[in-house]
Amino acid sequence: MSANPLVSRTPVGGPLGRAADGPCVACGQDVGADGTCATCGRVQPGGRDRMEAHLGQVVGISDKGRRRERNEDSMAFAAVGGEQPVVVAVVCDGVATSDRAENASQRAVDEAVAVLLESALAGGEAEAATREAVAKAIAGVTALADPTVPGTAPSCTFVSAVVTRTSVTVGWVGDSRAYWLATDGARGLTVDDTVASELVAEGMSEEEAMSVHQAHALSKWIGADAGQVAPRTVTVTPEGPGLVLLCSDGLWNYLPEASALVGALPGEPAEVDPMAAAAQLTTVALELGGHDNITTVLVPFPARTP
Image (cartoon, rainbow, N blue to C red; front, side):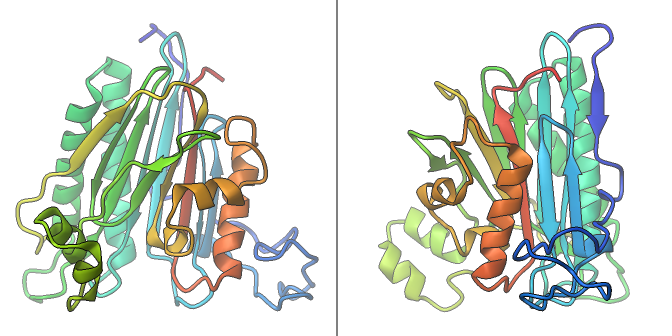
């Protein structure tokens, strides 16, 4: 890493919320003075309900969705410029059935991105840094638990990416996902940690696995009640430019296939404006129902110096 690299990151505690002004976040039409869209009727979000951040080399939008009372997703990312630019990003989805899920996801992303950023500045190995980041996230989230109230441990899922000029390293726990989006070769980079996925890995057919009780239930997560958890990691070396997508299930439940995600973009993955792409993907999820919190983080590949 160069002696004086450029460094930028989202603030600890999350990006600033989106003010209720400008075009509607759901349909893009005019918003009335009362903060309600005149076309679709959506009340415009603020605070954690709608968080947006743009660091140039990485962008993100996290939206409460249409049906949840609050946004329990969190995102954090950082960019390091210089001779060897690196972008690190983390998305965590608070487990809705747990206590203070939004606190769990926020603590996890803040702890993890700090570890990944420190490693990037030191020229560390990405997969080792990812494992350390998850361990730090686990410690942080576990510290939120109240030992006098059993069964309510704050919990979340986890997915991260370390993007350089030549490679993309992804780590995950749970069912938040990472995708490689490109004109050719778009694909998912993660495999959900769910009951169904575990059964498929053991040899059961996907159809049979999806029919079992609680097929979508998490088999791994981050929390005081999660036991010993280690992330799965993968490193890929794309042959050309594209986008790395990190997202919560509020997006991928509607667009589970990488090809569908590419098709929803407002342009080619290697050429589209990342913030416009994140906004479009979020809008599609809202238009399709918005039943869950929606978090979309996009990192252009290869990493570049601003």
